[in-house]
Length: 425
Ligand SMILES: Cc1cc2nc3c(=O)[nH]c(=O)nc-3n(C[C@H](O)[C@H](O)[C@H](O)COP(=O)(O)OP(=O)(O)OC[C@H]3O[C@@H](n4cnc5c(N)ncnc54)[C@H](O)[C@@H]3O)c2cc1C
Image (cartoon, rainbow, N blue to C red; front, side, top):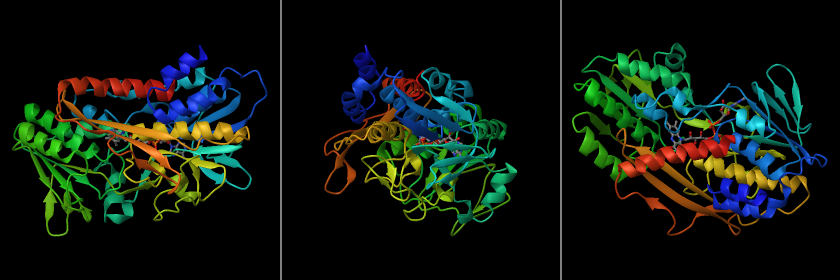
C-alpha cells in the first residue's frame, strides 16, 4: 500500500522516484518518536510540496507551514483568467489536504530568521523553533530599477499580475473596462524572471479576448530582451497566425520610467490605456532580509544535493528564489521537483543518513496560445558530481512541434495533477 501510494504520487519526477525508493519504509511511522522539527515558509509550489513530501516520506517529522495567504492561488493558468477563459475559482485551492496529512498550517507573515538560534520570527512576535528551515518565498520586485514604478504599483494604477491573486482580478477588470481601440501594453523585464514563456502566453490570452470582444484594440509587447526568451518560433507563429494586426512585438524595449500613462523607453515614449508592467525580480524579501542573497545580490545559492543555502546552515531554499543551475527555468514544476530533493535530503539529514548523490529533476511548462491550443517545453536535469550542479540531460525533453488542442487538454491535466501533488488533494 505504502509503495503504491509513493509510486502514484511520484509520477511527476524521476528524482522524486529515486528518493521514494530509498525512503519507502519511512511512511506511516508517525507513532514512533519525532525525528525533528521542520518549519516551511511559503505555501506556493515549492513550500507546499516540501511540507507534503516531508510528511509523506518522513512520517514522524513535525512539519509547520507558514503562509501569509488563506489559499493557494496558482500563477500557472492565471493568464487564462486574464483572457476570461477561466475563473479565479479554477486556480484557487485550499490547504486542507496538507492539514489532513498532518502538516500544521499557520497563516502568518514570516519576518526574520535567527540562523544561530534556529528560530523563525513571525510578524505577531511569536517564534517557531526548527531543526531545519525550508524557504520557498518566491520572488519580489526590484521596483527601484524603473523610475516611478513603485508609486505606480502602490497606487494600483499599474499592475504586474505576476503573483496570482487580487492583481489577477484587477488586471482582468482593466482589460474588460478598456475601450475598443485601446492599447494594452505589456512590459517584459530582462531575463532571468519567473516563468520565461509566461509573458508571451499572457500576450496571446489578452489578444484572444480582444480579438472578439474589442477587435480594434492592440496588444503591444515591449520586451526588454533581444528576442522571445522561450518557445520563440512557436510564439512567433501564434502571433502571426492568430493575432496579426493585434499583437505588435518589439524586442530590446526596456522600460526605463513611468509617468502617468506614459512609459519611457530608451528612445521613445509609449502611451497605452492599460500598462501591465512585469518588474525585474529577485528572491523574496525574507531571503533578502535574512542575508541569503549571495548570488549577484539577487538570488540564493544552494547546495543542489540538499537545497541547503550556501549562506546559512540548516536553511533550505527552493524555487524561484534560488540562483538556477544552467538551463534550469524558474517554474512551478521545477519548484515542486526541488522540494522533493529537499524533503528527501532533510529526512536523511535528520536521521543522520547519507543523502542521495544522484538526484534527477524534470520540468514541463505548457503555454496556451488560444483559449484551447497549448504547447510545451520539457527538460530533464541530472546532478553532475564534478561540477556540483544540475545539468540538462542531452537529448532529453524538447519543444512541441505545434500548439494544438490535445496539448491544451494536457496542460489543464498537468495543472490538476501538480496541484494534487503539491497540496495533497
Ligand atoms: C503568469 C504566470 C504563469 C506561469 N505559468 C507557469 C506554468 O505554466 N508552469 C510552471 O511550471 N510555472 C509557471 N509559472 C511560474 C510559477 O508560478 C513559479 O515558478 C512558482 O510559483 C515558483 O514557486 P515558489 O514556491 O518559488 O514561489 P510561489 O509559488 O510564489 O510561492 C511563494 C509563497 O510564499 C509566500 N510567502 C512569501 N514570503 C512569505 C513570508 N515572509 N511569510 C509568509 N508567506 C510568504 C507567498 O504568499 C507564496 O504563497 C508561471 C508564473 C506566472 C507569473
